[in-house]
Length: 179
Image 1 (cartoon, one colour):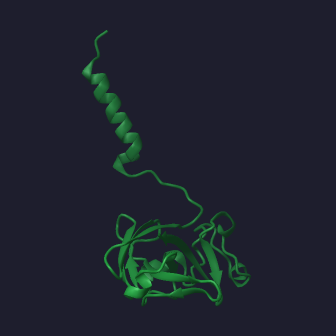
Image 2: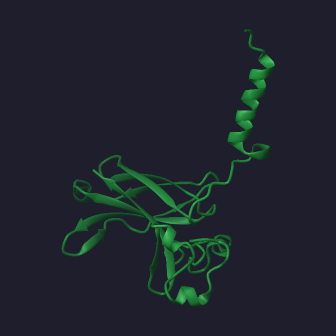
Image 3: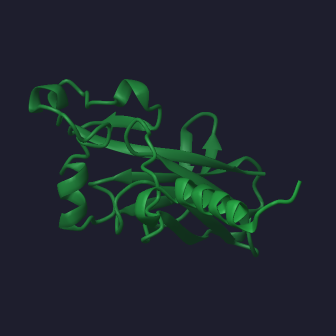
């Protein structure tokens, strides 16, 4: 049996169209609210490179923190405030600088944290996620102030990355471990 090039071309076009979505647009991915994925590697002495992906709005600022796990005190931040902006592709990156002594420690972690009261956020980002991050769990229906005051926002139960801190602020966080 001979293959007809037209059929193969048609099949390839259909597969490409389905994977790209209608009109070349990516298909909408469904997640329980917003998420952050992060990885970190030791680069040079005292430098840690961080890369991540998120579905937070473009220009959102994510706080990147290298932390030492201190058994008696919890976590100790080892770098100054570093804010990484989310680009058009949903990616962010940063370079964190810590002391040479801290760099040599084992079991360091890197937190990638989105909170509206940490890194300064643009107004267009706040309109989407809420001034206190109250829309991070789900955008419809919007969380009521009564829910926010109880420390809840829609989608929190379904998304393990969403958390609430004092002042009724909600955030999204992810951790990368450095070996």
